Image (cartoon, rainbow, N blue to C red; front, side, top):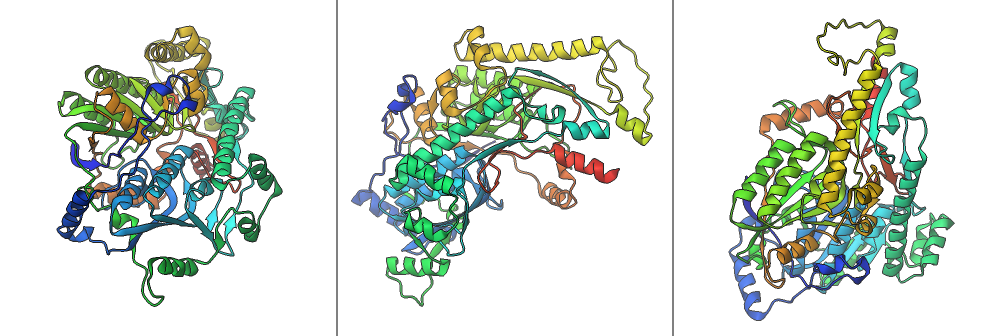
Amino acid sequence: MASSSEILELNLTTKNQEEKGDLDDHYPSGESEYKKLGPQKNFMVKLRLLIAYPWERVRKGSILNIKLRGKITDQVKSRFSSGLSLPQICENLIKAAYDPRISGVYLHIETLKCGWAKIEEIRRHILDFRKSGKFIVGYAPVWHEKEYYIACACEELYAPPSAYFSLYGLTAQASFIGGVLEKVGIEPQVERIGKYKSFGDRITRKNISEENREVLTTMLDNIYTNWVDTVSQSRGKKKEDIESFINEGVYQVEKLKEDGWITDIKYEDEVTSMLKKKLGIVEKKKLPLVAYKKYSRVRKWSLGLTGGKDQIAVIRASGSISRVGGSFFEPNSGIIAEKFIEKIRKVRESKRYKAVIIRIDSPGGGAVASDLMWREIRLLAESKPVVASMVDIAASGGYYMAMAAQTIVSENLTLTGSIGVVKLKLNFGKLHERIGFNTEIISKGRFAELYVADRPFRPDEEKLFSESAQNTYKRFRDKAAASRSMSVEKMEEIAQGRLWTGDDAASKGLVDAIGGFSRAVAIAKHKAKIPQHKKVRLVEVSKQSLSLPQILFRMMTSAMGLNHLKDGLISSDEVQARMDDGIMFQGSEGSSLAVADPIFNLLKDYLNFV
């Protein structure tokens, strides 16, 4: 059900991004414009803060302290949830810019587990915060390319003498266990449609295909070029100097200071002392810090940042796609089609909303589930403007959802496309024979044993298996062509299961505009004929939370190591519209920028058992 909570909507300008192409220029940019509060509004804010709830009380002259480390999701976290939420990080920075009690921001940056789109969104909000004139200081004891991409946007950046950093370049890797499965007696039988559709390669091949190498090389080049360009502009250096530094293999923190990569070398207590001096606080007194989680409870109403009668619904869809939810004891995570469709229908039937933004962060999943959601989004788009806003990944089934919207917005390094399908069966016949396991089957019907796991396909079964996948692919491709106003022949050229970064996807016509959530809001207002200067109320369509018994059960099974079997690859009679979640984009130290590979957990369990 929809909650009445609001998400802050920025003051927006309509400045166009000329460098993004003609089609992109048709849409407002969504670039934030900091506007200092006038005397009357400033008085109202102070009055509201006097009557604020106790948990909203913040000491005047405080510093917002955000510790950026670990996993960052695109879901709005509840009061009792742990971890970092991208929308709440961004909202906190916006609130802090206008909050008269906040003097600045102190970012503690360590290793992050998220994709480049989320990194870009956070960096954009740091730069927007700086428009307020307040300071933002970064402290980074452990960091790599991804973390530095955020850190270099800060006004000042410090690192301890013992800081561990690695700015040695980026890598992309794809792992293959085809040889391992061959040795243990498991034969994967995969039907993939699209020459670039690499899902399944890791369990069928022993090395990378030329098509997969081409895609990974292109994406890595895009990420690397973007990183060099952005850092060179931030540091005021030539691109050649940035690349020279990377190839030099620098490991001394002193060299970072000498070459202007950081402001100075300081331990955290020294940074704290420096911040006290900046605020005029004597050394013996405690630095007034307000934690990210506490500050997340400060309402926008208290800061005069709400308003506007027009409402826009925000629906978030993150994770792998499945058609139905699990049982009480094993509720599925990710995007559950039946639950997502309920939200879409409620929003469609409601007259409250002028437009809808669907935030998608998904590598795909079940083809049937993807198609059912596509249909509901399409029906929604017939009744009101719908904007799809992509986060880190909106590929295969994730793109299937997005293409139902009238307008698609992605970050420049969002991974998208992958218009292709794959069907998988694992033949355990040799393994079962080796360990003495036997299954007797009595069947009726020519193809009743199509998915039996004890033997390979017969020729007629293999033909049916292949034709089924081909049919699903053609349906996906043809709908994509119609959705993007292309001919089927043109769509075939850019489909074939190929993964694209956002910029390339925009140049191919798969995406309409490059930008983050604020641009999606600006476009939604434009489509709904709401003037850009007018505020709107953004309503989060709440995610159904787990009950307390379910939370406790999941904690128990996680501790026992049972959860990882759920997402392992198994034989399935459902075609998958999914990108290869075994691809890893890594920084020079090896921190993952994409998603993990569950098949290794499945294999590990088998080897431990045998």
